[in-house]
Length: 331
Image (tube, rainbow, N blue to C red):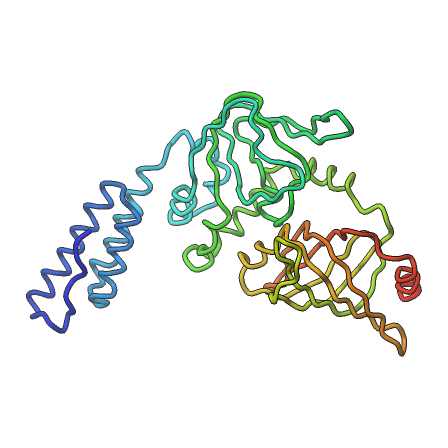
């Protein structure tokens, strides 16, 4: 990469024009070499150097997008045509160049039940099996192959894996890291929503829903209203200073759900699988019921306007005495 250009104020009009052209030529050269990150970085320099060089700024963007489009694997495009048909050219390039190509050997575990997953997989060849441990046996839930998505439920809902996945043969896949979508809202505002819609329509949500239903809470949920303060626990089990407040919506002996407001999706995603200690306050008539509970976050659900629901499983069952009072409030 060439050195940062001199300040425009230090150059004559002719030198400034030459510098703009030099930057433009270098952007074009990098784009043709498929070095898009450096080309885009240099284009930002061009904009900073001379915001009025509109022709070069616009043309360089078009050159980068054109070279990106020409570099896309056409076999991949054909396999996922129903997705890419919903995207404009910039969104198509944005998605494709966020994907990482993977080769997974046979008999390798890809996802583990009860563990986080921050990847969306696009299976291009080979076969995987989704299974759920049941006693000493593994019960196969589904088999997936070329043209199937994997991990779409945990990717779009921010939840722990409800089943495990094993490659039955060697598998060729492309994967999308959840962190790669963090700047989409700014760069391609509609792309994430289109991808989620595709996952809902194309993915195997029915299988996941069935698994989730089998794993539903064993105890009755009680609809209540109250306040909660959640402190993150450190790896050694001690309470950290990091905390956030929320509004509790339902509770059972083995878990609860409460709402929070969070401006960044990656912050909400970071809460998944964390251990929390909750301080709960529920108003019962003229009195307040205060209690604490410790547990693990198993799912984070997104709602409108940066609102999220935190689903938590308690480490120990709530005492019957507390549940009796909450049951009266719910009656």
